[in-house]
Amino acid sequence: MKNTYYKLGAIFTVGMLSSEEAFAGNTFSTIAKNINTSIQDLPGLLTGLSYMFGILLGVLGIMKIKDHVENPTQTPLKDGAIRLAAGGGLFALPILFEAMFETVGSQGAGVDAALLNKVNFNVN
Image 1 (cartoon, rainbow, N blue to C red):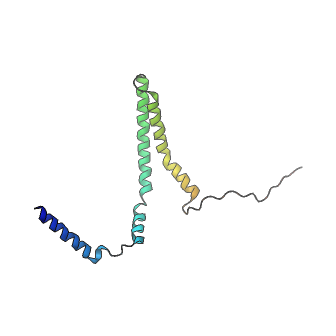
Image 2: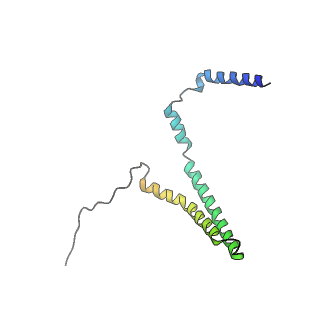
Image 3: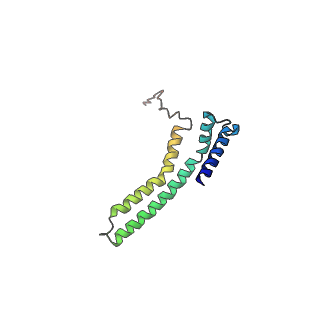
């Protein structure tokens, strides 16, 4: 039975490799273009995940602080504080990315320093 599956798989593979449509137009530029179009929605996904996990860690941090208030010997305060800080960082991450993108720009040219052309001192 195994030999039949192996033969069938080999025939299928050779058939796919021998067809012209299997490799038509697969150059490096088309593969790079496909990768580029595939990852266009990735920032939106990362933003949603960042907000979701930030809120989740914030809620878990509040619950750990509540556990600390109810029983300080069992639950240290640092556990809740760490979760709150991590949740706040994740929640602020998309805003920081947007600020960095607006600063650098979509062309990657960067921001030029301000130039001082003229100074006037008005003395009365």
